[in-house]
Structures are given as C-alpha cells and as structure tokens.
Image (cartoon, rainbow, N blue to C red):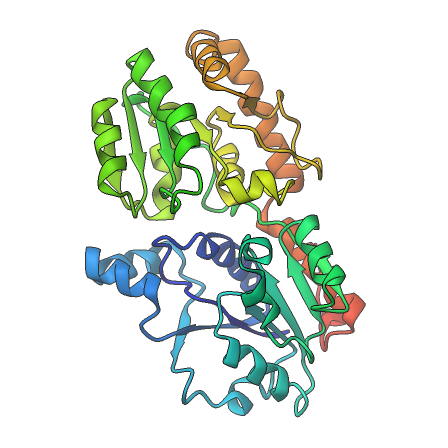
Length: 371
C-alpha cells in the first residue's frame, strides 16, 4: 500500500508520546513492504523545543535507531495536497493536526481514490470536547480511537459514522529486556509532569513513598515546574530531564522497579486506556506498580502483570515486597512480558489495521500478508 500519515512529529518525542507508537507502527508497515510517507509540520512545538534544548544532534541519533523511517516537513499554508495524496491508498491523520488541514484533506479525498482515517490518542474527546467537535470529519471513512470509551464518544456524538478501537502498543524491536551489569538505583520513572493532571497522584504514589523508604531513585521527563523539582530534591530523587524514548530500555535495565501513574482524565472519564508507557515498561521486563486505573478492556491482568496500589500505604507495601521477593519479581515480569508479546506489540496493531483496511476495501490490501 501507499500510506500517507499526518502527525505532529515523528522526529521528536519531547512531551509528545504519540511519536512512540507512530515510530513502531511505521517501521512495521515499511518492513511489510508498504510505502510510508509521514508528514509533520515545519517548526512544530515538540521538535522546536527539542532542538532548542538539546541541539540537532539528537535528530541524527533518532535516525540511527530508526533507519527505515523519516518524515517530510510541510507548511500547512502551502502544501499541495493533490500532489501529496494523489497516489495514496490509505491516509491517516492524527488528532493533533490543524483543524483547517483536516478539513482540506477530507475535501481532497473527493478527487482521489484513497481511504481516510482520523487517529485519536488523547483525552481531549472529554477534556476539550468543543475543539474535537470542531474537526470536520465529513469525508473521513472512520476513526481509530485508542480506547473503547473514545470510540463510543465519536459514535454517540455523531462525529463519525465508523470507529474502531486501536490501542497503542510496544515497539518490541526497541523495547525489550536488556542485560545489565548491575543496578544503579532502586526506582526509575519516565514521564512528564502533566499540567497538574496528576500532581496529587505523583506525590502520593511516587515522591512520598520514595522519600519515606529512602530509596535511590531517578525521574526523567519535561515540563517540571519549580515546585515539582523542589519536591523531587526534598525526597532525594534525582531529576534526569528529557530522555529520548529509545533509550528507555537501557535505563529500565539499571533499576529495580518502576511505576504507572495515569493522568486524572483517564482514571475519571476514560477507563481502559493505560497510555503507551506501561506497554513499554512491561516489554522491557521491569516490574511495575500502578496507581489505580480501571482495565475495563482486559488488556492486562492486574496483580499478575503488575501490582496495583490504591493508596500510599499499599504503594509502600508493594515496594517493600518487590525489593525483597525475587521470586515475585520473576513471576511478574515474566507474565507481563508474555502478555505484551502475545497481544500488545506494534505488529499486532498493524494486523488490526490491515483488518480495518480489508473492511474498507483499501486499494492493494489484498496483495499484502499479515503474517
């Protein structure tokens, strides 16, 4: 297939978790013989911040880790959509795209013979409903929603006539257990502060337990306000700043456990969506303790793939257990890794995308294999 994808950024994962899944899926599509072109806007905020803070050398490092994929920078005001989309079989547009661009791509579909999907991987369907409602999906063939609850919102609100649940997953070409010469610390967490969407939870499930147990810990991420950095310092937690996502497996191999702390909108309004980081952590074979979230879609087996703490006391109890019970750690990580490998890799998601393409009669899908 000739596949064209419009996303905020492939090159940068600075405060941009959607790049994680995009990289894995795009690589898988290329490996299966598809022609994949990914367009990202010139001077997008994620790439601009990354280059400003860390220089352009990090882009070269990205290419070393993902040699099969690249992106094409475009100017929304001047892009020639007829030229870009003329030979496409499938076009996927991410929900961070500009409203006007989304409408223009839909209108371009009337001139060309491609199928068109909108990809939603955020909580804005509930937290910024008016903005999402403003997307003109009239000519789109449907929506890829990264949770069943979001799929239902699109259908119930009449924003689309067709929608499929398409969860994120781990790129197991990159995210896998790595051998380590020894641990550098007890706990590591990779995640952004989150615009106060989980401030209370980060204190309760990470900062306070680490401080009370006097563990050696490190946290990576961006957009940490001064009060957050001070809280980390007070707890004796080292702050590592931005970490290229492809370096996470190496970091995970140097610590004894990690955590999952979902943002409040997912817990309160969007049950069943874990976001991508738990997939990646479990794929790397590091034991994980999660703050509460409701796995209504049965993606995992809580208590078997990871431990769940409902409050600080339970978090502390689980931490003590993981640090002292090697057999439990082996059982947790082994089962979690099996769950990822059997159900939640980017290869699985491409299989699901192929099934959707079959349903939509996408050009050239019959010539491809899903094996």
